[in-house]
Image (cartoon, rainbow, N blue to C red; front, side, top):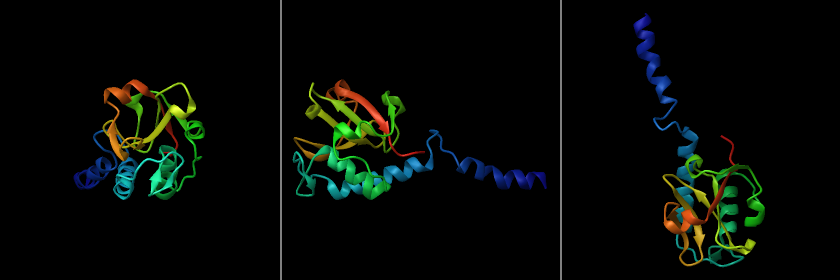
Length: 153
């Protein structure tokens, strides 16, 4: 009876965790971000824009969070950087965390995206519209400011 118990329940114990230590909720968030990206990929950047005819980075995050995670976040980058809990290190980022960059000294130079996985993030680029970039790229790594964990685990 003891052998049957062990053979039956061991797979369930390991099924509840992943080798990387990430939760299954991470996988759900990754899937939702990727679905959202497929809908918005290539939409041009427009400062103040809030639609598929043109969108800025903070509006993209606001729509993503509302539509895919059921969470209302503020409209602007300067307000979004105040929500959730600060994640100061790149290595601690999880899928769905907001990632912020300071590309200049003014608030209008702040940029936001959403962390996906493996140091990639989705954002509305002023040059290429909605796209996925890597934080490891010299440009983004240089300007990384912080992450914000808005979605509770």
